[in-house]
Amino acid sequence: MTVRVMLVSPATSAALRGARFDGDVPLDEAGARGARAAAGALPGAGRRVSGPSARCRETAEALGLRAEPELRLADWDMGRWRGRTLEEVSVSEPESVSAWLTDPSAAPHGGESLLALCARVGGWLESLSADGRVLAVTEPAVARAAIVHALALPAEAFWRLDIAPLTLTELSGRAGRWNLRCGRPLAADAG
Image (tube, rainbow, N blue to C red):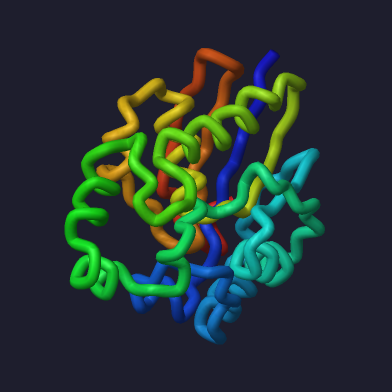
C-alpha cells in the first residue's frame, strides 16, 4: 500500500522571526496574510491533520483546511527553554546548548531529545498504512524529523535540513520505503 504524506510548514510568527523556542505563539499578521494567499495552492487529500500549536492550527484555518488535531505532530518539546531565544540560552547555558546540538540523545532543557522527537514523528508516519493522501500542517522540526525517519538518515542530519514557512514537503511510499520531494513553495501556480 502506498500513502502520500504532504507536510505543510506553517506561516511565520513573531517567535520564528526572533529565533525563539516557540512556546505556542500564534501567527503574526504577515503570516496569516501569506497563508490566506496560498489557500488555493494546496493539493487534495483524503485526510487533513494539524499539529496542535496555535501556529499550525491558525495556518490550517487560513489555508481553508478543516484539519483534525494530531498530538503526535506536536512541536519539539523544549522544556524550560520554551519562550527563550537561542541567543539567550547560548549565553546562559553554553555547555547545554553544545550538548543539545551534538548529542541526539541529550535533552538538557528537560524536554524531548532529538531521538525522542524523531521516534515520535516516525511512529506517526509508520502508522499511516492505508492507501491515500494525508495533508498535515506541521512545525518545521516535525517535518525535519519525518524526513530523518523516512530516509533512515542519522539523527545528526536533522540539523542540515531547512524547512521554510509555507512550503510543502512530500513523502510517498510506505513503512520502510519512502521517497522525498521537498521545499515546494505554496503559490497560486504550485497546485
